[in-house]
Image (cartoon, rainbow over all chains, first blue to last red; front, side):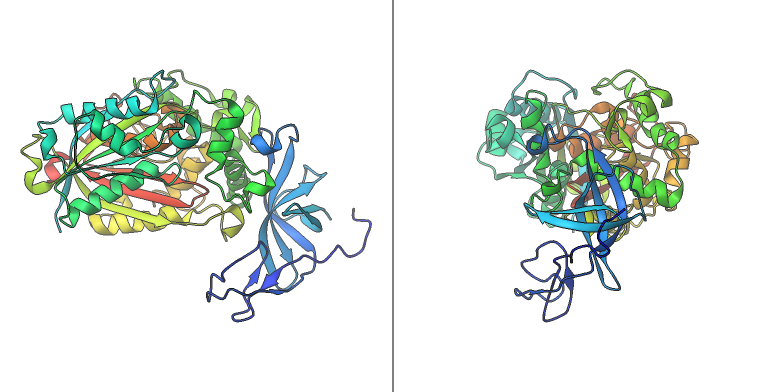
Length: 113
Length: 387
């Protein structure tokens, strides 16, 4: 279980022109073509959509296996879907709650909530 | 608009080969040219699909090098790349060129050499089909992508691990009698579900093997097709679409929309529906992929694809034979050669000459998919009586 009652905010961004929300970095808004984005932090609580355990990694991750990769829906009433790593919990699966930990070297890390 | 036919075809065996990449391409193209009564000077263009020759063999400029080596001089050539759909795209471009009257006769090839690479080099090359900034950064591999797909599929539709394993069992059984296949030995459901985990819930025998190989077809406008062969195979419909760039981009990971969109285009062009198809070669890079593809192509309702395989409905003697060649799971997946390899297998079926012949096959479909569902081509082909 989480030690802190509220996980860190998740660093989402928003297109100021059409309000579309982004989890991963965007350079052009898919909806309206805008090239500017503003910070729009979200509640760091999330839900796993799908999960896998990588046991045969690619060349950049060798020696770190096994590790968990998941597609996570993060945020409250408004949410975004991201591809992320799950720390320290191989047991989580679809619809299980997770919470945002940090973004490290461009990768979002979550853990079981 | 001109109608388009396959008038010639050639393939190498898929597996571990000693030849360099260019030589695999030369062999496939030479066999395709030899299979029909065509003079080299009548060929208008050559399009070649390839994915990682630059990274693994340091060999690029493949299309003109192959063309020159087989005596196709002076014509326009190009290489197409869309990861595992590279030669499906080459086929599509050739089809479009003939259909719109730009060319009359185009040679289309697909080629890849993979087994010579060391594992880290190989995984890096294959991984380049994923988006480095998002999925790739997390360490997600291609088995991992389909591990996510299968995790969600089993959760949503209650499919069992044994039902999914039935895909590998069927395709390995089919591959056992295909001389072009890399794997020629059958496996059991127990073999699959007890093989080592690669990307949960996917296991080793759920994954296609790498392979080396080349395949080629000669496409011609219907007006001239019969001067090259007594049995031209008409292209009834073709589709080509872009899908999502990474796992997080899907609202529903159990449906890859590049496939649904390409299939819709191909069926519309052919004036046919999924129920008209008699035999299918689809992109079974993983067992989970075949199940999803079979639903995305309209052969089964969402969530019913796994049970359909387990019930034998997609066996060679089933109601809709899928991958009678053994598919990628048994033939192997020489990435850039796969799309034309599938067309080759479907054409053999429509000519009634396949080792695993489907009785009365009159309409066949080939489905090629690249990246994390990023690109797909679908081709509907008819028997010679459809010309």
